[in-house]
Length: 351
Image (cartoon, rainbow, N blue to C red; front, side, top):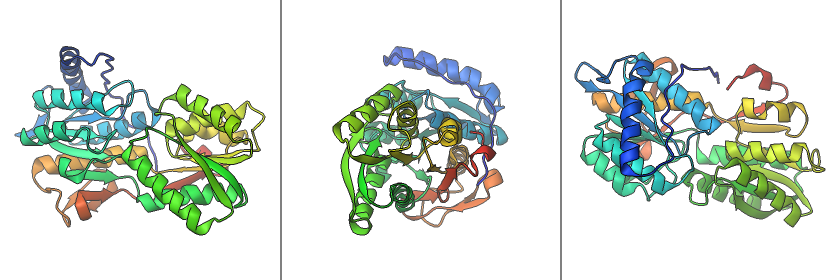
C-alpha cells in the first residue's frame, strides 16, 4: 500500500452553525476551491456537475486532512471543483446544517463521513431528491440515505488486526480497555462489537474492562486515557480505533510512569505516531491509506454523476491510479486491507 501527498486544498472553517453563516462560508469556499479543483467556477466538465464537497466528521483532524487531500487530488485530475466544509466538533446535528446548505448550493456530490447512521438521514434524503449524489466514506449511514459507501476495510479485518496486535503485545493475558471516538459513530461501534466477540471467543485470559469515548477530541481523549489508568490500576493495554484517540493516548503514556508497561494500539497515521513508535511508547498500530480512501471516494462520486454507476451491486468504475473497482452488496466499495506500522517500516511513510 503506497501513500503520497496530494495537492493543497481550500478549507472552509466556520464555527457558526447559523444557516446564514454557513451559506456565506460555502459560497466563499466554492469560489476559492475552483483553483484547487482546476476547473474554474462552474465546477463542471462539459455538462457534468463536478462540484464535489467533502464533509468529514470534523475539521482539524489529521486523518480527514489526509483523506480529503486525496479527494482533492482526484477531483483535480478530472477537472472538477473540490471543497471541504465541516464542523469544528464531531456532531451529527452540525453535519445536518452543512448538508442542507450544500443542497441549496446545488453541488454535484457530497462525500460524507457520518457521525451517526440515521441523524443525517432526512437531510440526505432531501439532497438526493434534489439530484445530489451521496458518497459516504470512513463511516457509513443507513444504506437508504446514500448512493455508495467507500469502505476502508472490512469491519472484521479492522477488528481482528486490533485485537491481534493488543493481545500479542500483552502476552494474551490481562486487562484491556477501548478508547473510542463518539458513542454513536457507526464504524467505531461495528469494530468494537466485533472486537468484543473476538476477545470472548479467542482470548479467554484477556478481560475488557471498559469502553470510553473521547469524541475525537484531543484533550478529551487525553483525559479519558488518564482516567482509565486511574480507574483500572491493573490495565495492561488500550485499543484506540480512532486516529485522534490513539495519538492523545500515546501523548499521555509517553511522559507517564505507564510508558512501556501499558501497551497501546489502534488506528493512527504514521506522522502522528512516528515519535511514539521510535521512543517505545507504541509497538505497532494499523491503518489503511486515508489518502487513497478520499481519492477513491471522489472517483465514485464522478462515476455517479456521469451515470456510469448507480450503486447497484456489480457496477464497476475506474478510479484513476487505483484501477477499477466493483460495487458490492448494499452499495459498498472496498478499498483494501489494513496495514500494520511498526519501527521497521514507519520511516517509509509520510502522511
